[in-house]
Image 1: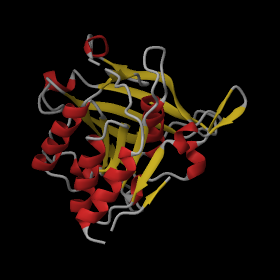
Image 2 (image 1 turned 60 degrees about the vertical axis):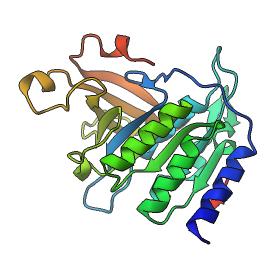
Image 3 (image 1 turned 180 degrees about the vertical axis):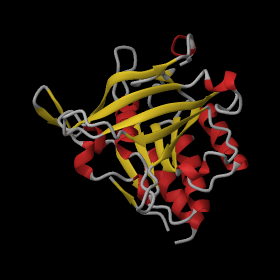
Image 4 (image 1 turned 120 degrees about the vertical axis):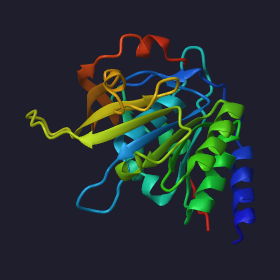
Amino acid sequence: MHRSNMIQALRERLAAHEPVQRRDAIQTFAIPLRAGAVHEWLGGEGSRAWSPPLCILIDLARRAATPSATHEGAGLIAWIGRPCQPHVLALIGRDSGRLDDGLLRRSIFVDAPDAASRLWAIDAALRSPSVAAVVADGRSLDMAATRRLQLAAESSGCVALLARPLSELKVLSAACTRWVVRPDEIDTGTRHPGWNVELVRSKGLPPMGSTESDSAQATSWRVEWDHVACALVASSVVEHRTRQTAAAAPGGIRLTG
């Protein structure tokens, strides 16, 4: 199928759903993620092939899609790129002892085989009034591509969560925030997998690590995956040297699901 036909199929699928009321920000285990922006999550490299930090992305997607007291609409989650498509069981949690498949029912999976197809699909999903968040494989996207996605997110108020390998940390990007995710090597005596998550760039601040003053703004959290709730738990604040960051934060293609 031609790319234009595939993108049209995606747009028609999204248009079949009701518009969602936008949030100003997503509350997370760390600082709130501003809506209408691109946020990048880098990590997952090791001895094996690259694998994005799916547990963290699932938790953020669930927070974006869950209705709140002031936002009744739940919204769809678009998972774009095969590496960013979690197992269906990872999208089913528990609410008061009962299985909760709400996130799974609101998910649309898009299998985009190359960078150009991914860019078009991410852009189309971000501009949809029915999508609460887009979780996508952001590998090889350059400054021009991320700027295009940032403009698309700003125009709709949608949240873009892009996963990238850690080796692309120095690649220029228009993302509002950038996060580095590393596996936690500390033995806590629990069976819950854990990660150290570090905010290395935030809009309005220079990239971290270039000077001593920049690195002093770094913020890190240790998080664990709760298998029962299918959610992240911030077990402790590892490092928090930012005084006002949290308080000031504003808020072919295969279709399934």
